[in-house]
Image (cartoon, rainbow, N blue to C red; front, side):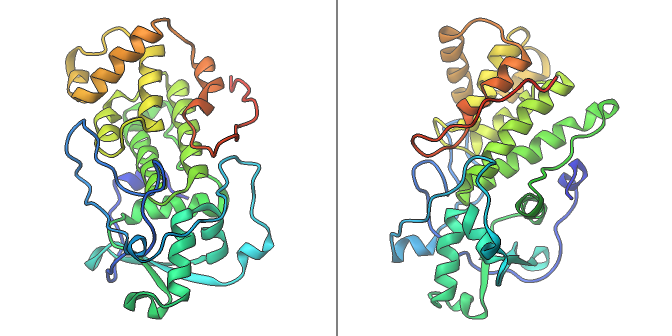
Length: 287
């Protein structure tokens, strides 16, 4: 299982390739560039989007939605990274397609031989990192996210929060709402346990998400609800970009009052990715 230490770990060996799948539907499924600054991530071009526009099966966004035994039938290979930083994974294709709209289409393209790279039955993700895909694979099979560091190792907490943000963005690009929602839940819960607001992730979040992103709204809501004082002093001032400050000002005007961590936990569905009409069941206080 991945831990905070995987954030600093380098990716594994093999070869690279080009990606298959489909692009963004609504606010999911592609790397976005926010107005907060230019993204350090390359823009992923989805070849399948130019070939067909196809409706995917409904995607689960709540923990009660689980695949049946048929999802654990045949395997498919997924090649992640490029050059010496490439690793190849074998994953149950039904499981991938159950949770991800991107992989539903990518698997169909491989099965129909739409790309020369898919002739060996492989989906290529050259723009993804092995450490992120490792954590995604762990979650896919166990529903476990990377462990937070021990409370006496709070200096490692920033790395842990960064991995959760990386996973959320992976879920955004690959249309995996259940993963995105679990990352939001863990981010809020772990910040409450450590009593630390991850303001050092704000710039990364804004550089890798689109306007109105649930992850943007989540971090701004937590900051304004829990840590209003000393927001822009000292080192934390460097964590903010123009768009994040505009969002901060808007939320402060609309909701100037403080909130507890328990209140944030109860509101976490406000920052989830759900289809119309879908909501999480009530969330109890964790403490």
